[in-house]
Image (cartoon, rainbow, N blue to C red; front, side):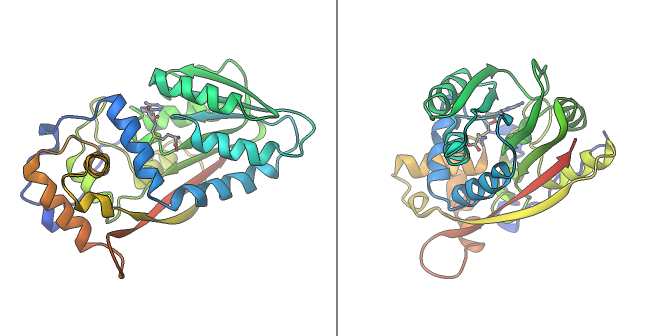
Length: 277
Ligand SMILES: C[S@@+](CC[C@H](N)C(=O)[O-])C[C@H]1O[C@@H](n2cnc3c(N)ncnc32)[C@H](O)[C@@H]1O
């Protein structure tokens, strides 16, 4: 894969130290902060509606894999809506390197009527399919894959005929300039964004259809620096444990790119890429 260019830094973050200097979030703080972050965005329901409509077009007995499934909240909601009224069970497996998340996925998705759930602990890079799937989802998880082109090949090889690989990854826009500037490397590389996925798709010769889904993220809690949840959400925004000295410059950047109106509301887009088998 060719070397990827580092993102341009927004003006308010120009004087900050190199991102490798900041500590990464522990998997526990990451999972907690991620749930709080998503609770403050309408993007979740936009994604859930979009995925539900897509999966409903599939016949009964559809088998789905969610890569980087996290705690299963999103997958359980989509599975409940897709399986309602179906005569045959929906198969939904989750894969996540963080064991407590995989366990939560299994308990949440397994509790949905009409769904056969399974879960594995592991990364997209080391994924070895035990079965094939009609749909493989990777929602907000390929940021951390070590080698995107080989993950694409690996995941597409696990699709059944007429199957599809559906990958949602944020663009490096105003909001994610913070993580682009500050997130420490994971697995020896910076986080990947939607344009990196486009490069990786081109590199392996896969064509994909792209749709941008938009939500609104409200970060008002982050303005109160004594609010613990707000602090965790700001860390999640940076994908790093922010030292005190960086909290105000990061907030200044977010304020500078907020949407018109009251409070700290931000445009929260995500690109959905669909590759056919
Ligand atoms: C932002 S969360 C998204 C979780 C879930 N898909 C959702 O949308 O709610 C990212 C997830 O990717 C997982 N992850 C981290 N590195 C990964 C890797 N190399 N391969 C697959 N998943 C990974 C994390 O453990 C985490 O659960």
